[in-house]
Length: 267
Image (cartoon, rainbow, N blue to C red):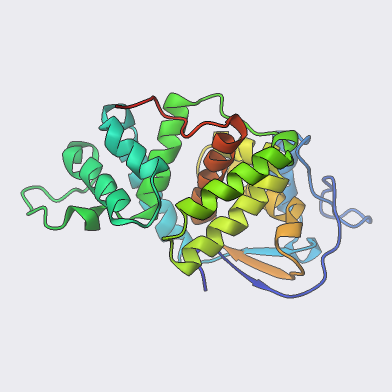
């Protein structure tokens, strides 16, 4: 089972708007035009009334949430990170030794920012300190807020054939070193971003662990059900889902703008 999600086959129903529990009508979920309040209220719809049953992975969800909070504290120092190393972490091919070394280097050289970093310990293999997907996700989110706070996507952009070809060409090359489970999670998330770019933009701007984040993830999964095929159940780790969606969002924005990076030019 992936840390991100697991699915089982079934036939999907269709839904478009938000209805509270207790209504005689079949509950329907908010779309990209719905307000934050409606998206949050939709969390009250009984899970067995949803076209796709969405449940938490209780084995990992709490641990991921706590770890991500620590990663977020570290990532607040993003403005002091070596820009060349930061670029390798965010824009380099994921899963490679160079990207992991760069992430480990950022952690080691900014250890004062890293909660719980063991003082006086031998550094060992720096690359091994740069393998956390949660650390990378928090670094990416912090970099987006600092360097590209206006980053956004529209359906017109993600449905543009030129943008889609650019995305596919670039990402097939960048992600060839990912492990299969990691790649599957990214491809799934990239599909969700493609079909629900406005909701994903709002997710990126939401606070991690908030009710709005939960509501947006639910809406993205339901409204993006074409990415699931025929499904009757989805089990998610909300934090990991956010990490992958933000990663895919960044790559789609880069493709839509036709540029190699959203970070400041280095070198």
